[in-house]
Image (cartoon, rainbow, N blue to C red):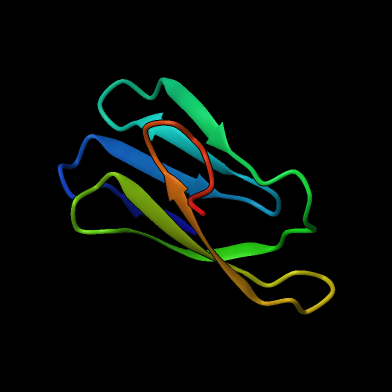
Length: 79
């Protein structure tokens, strides 16, 4: 899954275990969002309207079906 930030500057690309943050203009990798302690099968990602947070649905192999919120600037999972 992919999502573009509200300001159009950042592209988020989800794969099975992480979300890669990419500068939309240059293609430069900015950082990777990943939660180390869970099995992931990420899909359905979306930036919040302010653009500083990203929400992702986790279809985990254990069917945990969690929803995670990341701070895009720090890469930390919001608690």
